Length: 245
Image 1: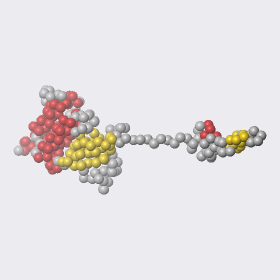
Image 2 (image 1 turned 60 degrees about the vertical axis):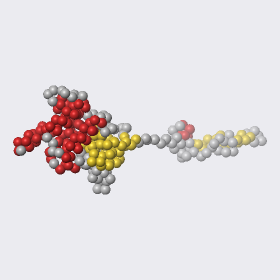
Image 3 (image 1 turned 45 degrees about the horizontal axis):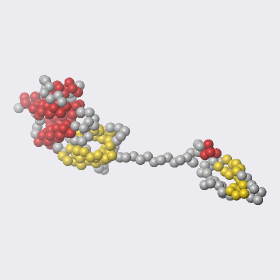
Image 4 (image 1 turned 135 degrees about the vertical axis):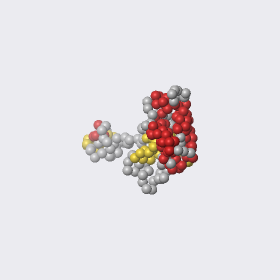
């Protein structure tokens, strides 16, 4: 607010209204036109923190995304939270953080088990590849897979093979549909070597090495550098079951 002045009879200018009292306690006193005015000398120098322009609020845009996903893996992040890996139809293989999932009254309780198919909602993170998990709605728990150790081992091998053959957050809906069909089969049938070879052949087709010799599994191993060690264990299990029969 500017000062208002007037001249007296002798022509001397007098200050009628002072500037507003500054907020800072560090003041100096000087005389302007015969009137003492207190001002913040630090404000005059441009380094008064109290008189500085207030910081502007940061506006953060949170993008919520919904996708269909199959739970591949989960591991402990903290005493209350979990890191969950999903194979999704629209986002590829992603990592999510389920905060508070280990608490007794968590809304995620009973919804985050291996091989579950669910509709998930995440808050897309811009700073890392760990996205906060907002909501989980179970579509198919594939309970039959967990009722037999051979089905569980076959499903675990399929999951490990997909993790080897895919990049994080690389959109490949065919891989999701392949895993969905494989789990639907394992939910109703016991696995055998033919089912495993069919899964490997389909994955080789999707990744572009279909028809490579001597087998789809070897082609995938050469392309991605390795195969899961669980493959050998699974094939030995099939051989043993055939011998027992």
